[in-house]
Length: 335
Image (tube, rainbow, N blue to C red; front, side, top):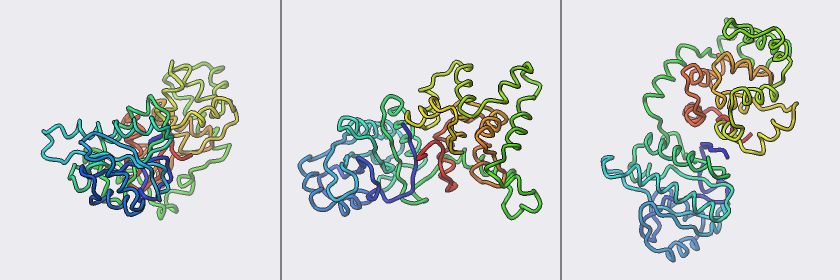
C-alpha cells in the first residue's frame, strides 16, 4: 500500500487513525498534542487519562471524538540529546508500535506527524529518514495506506547531500517556461501525440546496445503501456507484488493494469512503474511514451525525476521526498 507525504493540518485529515506525538504524562502537551486535543474536544483528555503514563516507544489507541479520524493513536517519542542515546531506535519503535495498533484495530489508513521533530528537537532530516524507513518496512508486509503529514515547509528537511545534488542538476537542466520561444513548445508538453509517441518509442528501441531482431522491434513497437509493463516484469524475472509496492501503488490499481490491456495510467503511475522496474532514462521515456507522456525540461518535477533516474536512485520514497521539497506532486500516490 502507498506511503505519501502531504502538507496539511493533521487534525483535518480524513483517515481511520491519526497519530498523536503525546506527552508522557496524561496531560495536554504542546505542539501536535495540543492541536489534536483542541480539535477532538475534552473527551479525548478523559480517554488519555485512562491510559496513564506512556513510555517512550509505546502506543495506545483512543476514539477520535470530534476529529474526522475515527481513532487517535498516542505515542511518546524520544527527546533528542546527541544521537548517542539510542534515539534512532526508540523513534523507529514509535512508528512500529503505532502501525501495529492501527492494523490490530482494522485501520486501512493512518496519518503520522514527524514524531519528535518539533519540541523534542530531533534533527528533521534524520526524523524523516527514520519515519520513511520504518513505515516502508512495515507496509511491505501489511495492506495499509500511510500519510506523513507535514504542517509547513519549515517542518520538513532532507539530507543536504540530496538537496545539493538536485539543486545543481536543476540549475543545469531546468528550462523555465518563459524560455518557451527559445526552446520551442514541444519541451513544454507533458502529454504527446500518437505520432510523437511512436517516434520516441522507435528512437529508443533502435539503439545499438543491446541488439534485437526486427521481429522483436516490430512486436515491441505494437505493445501498449500495460503490455510493456507486464513484459518487463516477466522478462526481468521480477515479482508483480514487489513491483507495485516499489512503485507506491496499491493492489487494486495494479490489478487494472494486469487485467485491462487498454488501461490508461496517469503520468504519475507510469513514471512510478518505470522507477520500480529500475529502467534507465531512455527506457523510462520509451515506457511512458506508450501512455502518451514525455519528460519535459520545462516541468520541474520531470527534471527532478530525470536526475534520480540518471543517477540510478530507483527509490520512490527518495524521489517523492525531493518532489515534496520542491512542492511537486508525488509519484504513485493518490491516483
